[in-house]
Each structure stands twice: as C-alpha cells, then as structure tokens.
Length: 101
Image (cartoon, rainbow, N blue to C red; front, side, top):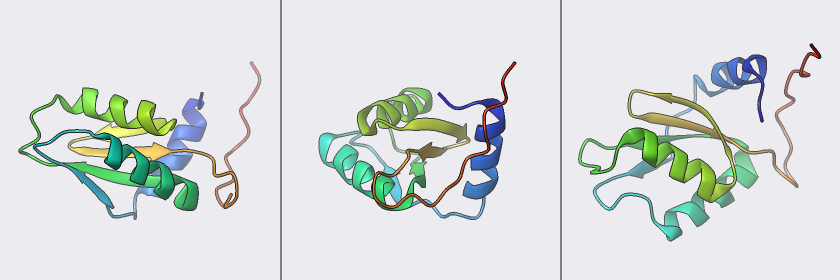
C-alpha cells in the first residue's frame, strides 16, 4: 500500500503524462488488462482515459484496472485513472520513504 506522501509524489510525476489507454463502451477486458500490465512493467506509472461512452461507473473501472494489473490506484480524477506498479526489470521511479509513526 502506498502512503499519502508517496501518492502525492506519484501524482506529481504523472501530471505531465498522456493517457496511453482508453476504456470505452466495451469496458475492461482481459486483453486490455494484459496490455496495461505490460505497459506498467516498462513505465511503472501510466494514465488511462475512461471515455464518455463507457457504460461502467468510473470508480469500478479504475478498481478493476488496478486489481487486474496488480497495480496501485494512485488517482482517479475526472475520467482519468493513474496506476502505479513497481517494475521488476525497469525500476525508474524512486518513491519517498514511508515515514514511521
């Protein structure tokens, strides 16, 4: 689980990214989940757009994408989902350390 500080850091990193996937009328499917998983392995942090014609609730779509790809849901703002997953082979993002309470 990400801390609030780590999520803020990831949101700032994601700010300049463009969405590389779109969820449309068909909703979330296995092929999309597989592609998103592969993209996360390469990039660690991605944005996904939910199109207006998507029939599912945006919160459900965001959670399904995160769960399916084994990723953390960093942010759902408007119709844009930000996902993060630590890469096994392409680690590029250094998260701030979680502070101990």
